[in-house]
Image (cartoon, rainbow, N blue to C red):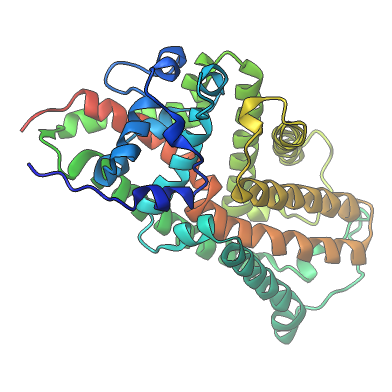
Length: 376
């Protein structure tokens, strides 16, 4: 079977943040030191070789970049300073763009102007919706308070409309992400494969997908357990908050000031803590640059952290202003919160950083499928 080479692959990958990977002379130290590399799924060395040879198709069918959690051991021990850890991170950006059939992921990862323009576009739409569209339907800002002294949020952010918009946004994002995961499956399992995987194996190994999403056990094999903890808090906090504001918004966005021990408030507090904990570790690490995994930040990393931090801060302000009976402050912070949250979900979840939450557990699942594949 003929193998097609892409002589422009290197230039393409550089646009996703890959540095001087030609410094690698394949000593194998990175593969030997990595606690996650295993027989049949060796990295980072194997991926570097594919890039150097221009084997684009084989690179696109790789699962190894998703199996890497970037503990940084490979970069610290590389005798040539080829930075294999950051290379794997850059490959994840590249692979995300190859799964995306719309081409937007590639635009966002390779053009800061393009991503910022879309973020600003969605933010402006949100502001216009609250200041122009909703008032035209009779929903006006009021300074009216509830009997408990809280702000009536639903007077300017009506639950039926906000909830309907939440579900529409969730369906759009889910459709994009699921279709990209199908393309991921096609590239890894189906395309150019000389093996086949039975339906029973697909069903039997599916539990790994759920387990790895919830616990991310492979992460714990890395020496730095604190990094796993901060990553888990960040992921669990965001997941809980996403489910609450999309699926259970009428329960969560209530005008009644519930007691501190109510589950609604505890879920909100945990999600806030998890997000703040993970964000603090990531932001401080990137400023201090003492740890290898924080020394090389792509613009998409910073945009993600900034948008998520602003989402958390404005969410906290809404809560504080609402329970203390401050209508105007609640109104302004609510609009600011939505102006950051909406573009973050519409851009980051299907096309950028948050999509990794889906691709990584699916890659572990696909890895198991490949292990149980049999010749056709």
